[in-house]
Image 1 (cartoon, each protein chain N blue to C red):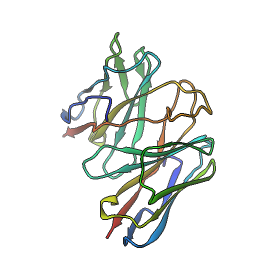
Image 2: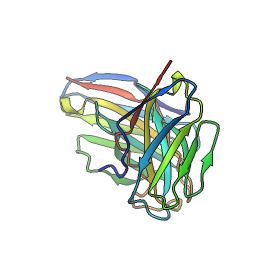
Image 3: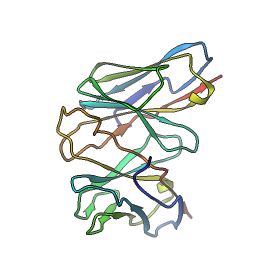
Length: 114
Length: 117
């Protein structure tokens, strides 16, 4: 248990569906992240929110839309996804300081796009 | 693109030390080396980090070369539960609230460590 929870843990959706992934951190951190992990590929950073402001959008397609309503919650809204978007989506949080940025990861949402 | 180079796989006997190397020749003077591991189907887990001095915690030791271009993660007495993919990365200095995306950690493909009984 890392203090970062993600729901749902598994999601199957069609290409025309709209769904949302939810992440919540109970650690009082000031930054939250979305990562994508495809089979046999490295973790890819998608979005970073620092103090609730998006500071990084790593060239992610617009069919992925993040939302950070407060420092404890992070959403990833999904619409018109493609089968190649099937992957493990990981949320992380950290308390950024000048010398320390340990990221705490949630268990991930396993997404399958049919 | 990954900024670090690690062997794709390693094997270690249970109870022996596992030494996992990482090359990070492009690291800058203010960047910290971080190690994470990912056990199958779980999120990555932080292990240790360091700047230029060797570091030790309850999980592992980190040895950083004097020129800081490479490091070694040492698991002193590997157990079967240490079987995982180990990622080496580095992270630049950033002030709290600073914008610009420098908070990100870039993960490479890591080393798949298999601890054998």
